[in-house]
Length: 207
Image 1 (cartoon, rainbow, N blue to C red):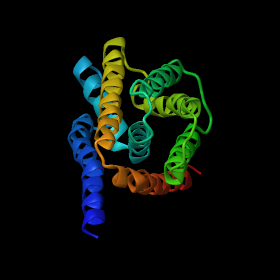
Image 2 (cartoon, rainbow, N blue to C red):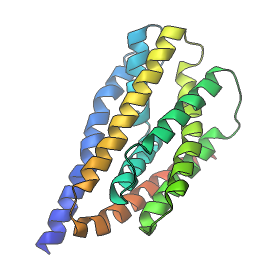
Image 3 (cartoon, one colour):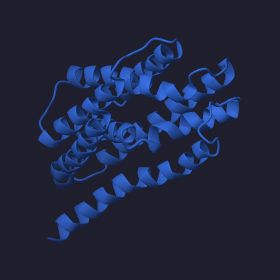
């Protein structure tokens, strides 16, 4: 009983630390009052904030990190998501309309949560495809806040997005790898169920 309680406490800490980290950049974003970033620093702060103040985006980042850590995937795999995300932002900024992007974002969170909750081996190519496709839609959604900005804040926004998403995903992957074998048997499933719930709420909100 004590071992299981310790495992739960450690897992709670694993999830709560990034949530605490998310609070600081959220304040930076709201300092701009929701307006389009006009300077390099405003773009950077907005980029750092956006992936973590949106629970659906953050849940998917958490899923990436936990999957990479729990299933022994390559630490470079999150790069697929980050690169695709940048392309998604560029598509939005370029004026291309993607109908139902928020629905696809919610669907990606549901898919990631389901795969984690099943706690069964999934081919690396399947995870890579999910990360890449999801990255396009998450990036498109995140591009809304920078649409119409000048080049300097846009570049800073992309730098901020790439930095914070890489830190969260890889940080969670490394933290997950430090869990014991007993903890790894239950932690991904518990995280998957939580992420599945976030995806369900996001899907209802997007319909």
